[in-house]
Amino acid sequence: MRTKTKNTMTPKEKAIELTEKFKPHVNPYVGSGMLSNSTDDAVILYQAKDCAIIAVNEMLHQFNAAVLLNSTQSEFTPQANKIWAFWVNVKSEIKNLCEQK
Image 1 (cartoon, rainbow, N blue to C red):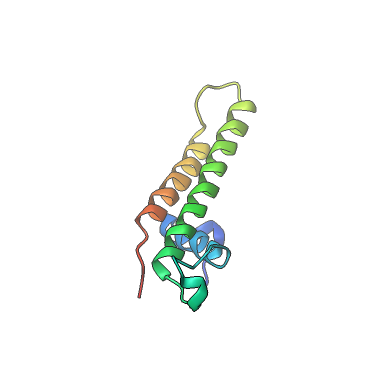
Image 2: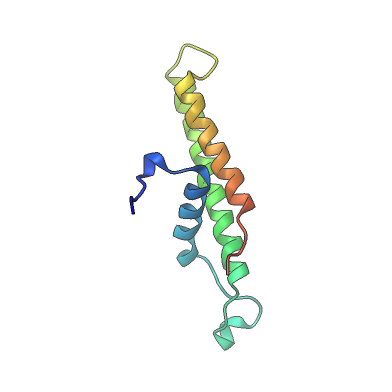
């Protein structure tokens, strides 16, 4: 099986990768869950998705600023449009991720 590189990932694959990277860093407890050491997978996913969306929003903001700062044009180049669209689609895919059992 061929492993995909980061450059060939689909927006959905990138959304899953980012969300999975944030899961270990969120608070998995709800209510008195910390006392009973029980976690809620839906809460973990919700919080990880929020973190991933914040990261993508920051990337889009920085990308936009860098492209416009280094350009005499008021519009993105075709390559920049492609990159922008990829990250906008990643953000959409993150929002659509559901708990997978």
